[in-house]
Image 1 (cartoon, rainbow, N blue to C red):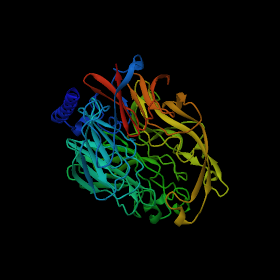
Image 2: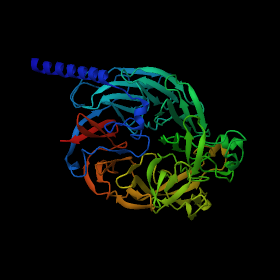
Image 3: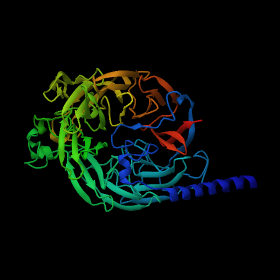
Image 4: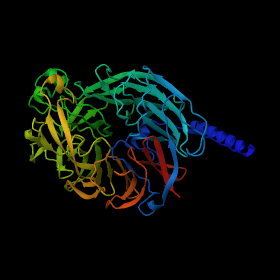
Length: 564
């Protein structure tokens, strides 16, 4: 019994020393370091500003990845009691970690699953779900602190992650608050309302730090305009606000709407993180669908700018530099709120600065990122049938009106979830390939009402899913617009799409449709290694004490793998 008590005391002391040591040695995150991140870190949503989700680490590579094994696993718990911490790499019991509680509401929502990116800075991991943030030790996974936001309610569909500026973390909440949290203690510094909760806004995006700008996106599934805002990370004051749709009669793009009322209630929500080009100071992101989403008569016959588009915003002024619309006059909720990937590469024999995106409508786009000039449009997979074979003068798909929602039903591919959705793609400069998971799905779309009161937002339709032809991991050659390879997942079920990560070790990591974390050879798509965990976010990697780790969330668990 004495031996057991000594072991328990030693474990608790070790945990406490680790917490103190980590806090003392933390150098935190200068915004300048995100421009050229340390190879051993993951300091922002995509790892760096490019959106490529590409790591230069090579300790784990295509030759030795079969030796990858579990380093530690930690279950996270929500609520006010706090998760267990202490030693034992998350496997053993430890002292309860106090939870720092904030919020303007009284409800404690279910913690949800880990869907967003996990930051790794100076040996810390910062993990989030709706209303929750945890700090963990990246060496063994034990929890250092937990922050809980008591909510007013709202849509708790997911959270994409947190941002870091010096010694502060920033979290968006479903009930529309931006919270600044002390990264060392987990205590709230301030909170600011970012949108009207009464207008049914909700916020899922991971904030983005660019210099001394803190970019925050939010949206609404009813009938309000989507927006991107810049906050001062020190004070929380708003610096500028950009609306994704025209708000006044003289605003650019108003001619593509029936009138100001339709435009200013027209959607274009900002759900997912974009990418930043430091040479032009442009933040390049995708916008969501127009509203009403399915019954477009009240919107007018125009293209409904700047919904379903790639847009470039000057981070200093909040002014739009250029745009490219991927789904003009969308009628299927095929938003373009996917991560844009910035690539410096060759185009028709000449160097070109490009931005690439795979859109929910099933098409792949390549643009010049300095001007927005269209370079290429192609299908990711064969099934999309909602558009004509020919493209319009801007290289965008041309909607077939007969594939809109109809009283008698219309057979459409893809189904509402899209060929792709929000989980992030990746790009490897080694192979020149763009990687993304894709689903060839079909559905019958039925028009339920044309009454504007019932058709606003996402209303006015019924959809019957008919299944899928298959789900794939695709390595897309941007020069040809065709897949260099396609890995088809076993079975015919669609399942949940998962984000991907590429590394300089000639590897590609993703979760499959059957509850596995899988490593592929990035040049060929050959499967090299897998382990049985149901991955719920895009995998990441970092280096600590000379060892490379591969990190993945799976529901309420965080798993880290390394070579033996």
